[in-house]
Image (cartoon, rainbow, N blue to C red; front, side):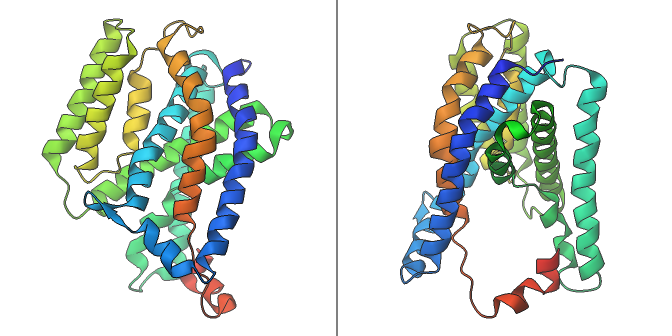
Length: 284
């Protein structure tokens, strides 16, 4: 089935956003390795309400990014490239390979060492940068491939979040997690009852995010859950899903993702770079 126009428009806006993302990455790397590097790095580590600014960006602002991506995938499942079961299964199997193959390669280089327990780290895909780079290719990449890679990256990230929550989280607060999932279930009931007003979903989404944040599970998963709880309807311009999706395009592309890039690429290249790149952890 032909990809929906809204998905195409999303990537058109992201093409310009992708350029901003790359520019912010270069700027951040430059500042981090300049005379202002220490102050720049410490700025992102500044504590606010018990968490660093970087943490609030990664677990807060990026939830909105995942909400938008979830809405895009929901539309493709109902009306676009993923509307057929066989097409929807392909990114699922691709994501499984994208999770366990990197973990296997990591273990190949690190088995028997103190770092072998970090096998879960390479399982996740940095979806923000992946889609940003992909968007720069524009029409040279078929829309069907863009949809596939978007779905694959989201499933890969969600799988990694679940694995990290199970095997790497020292303290998982089950009460908060169950409350968050209970709110998600309530939003699904609203959906079934054909509640079209966006406000109850946004209030429920914020509350769900709060409890997910304090459960030990990466809070960005809330964005995807909320996206699939919001009614799709008939998918026209008056539908709840369409209105929110259209509203989020520009803020995500030109505000949230650039801030994310600035906060997460403050990397200092110290010492012998060649030696660093040839270490086992770098090779994986």
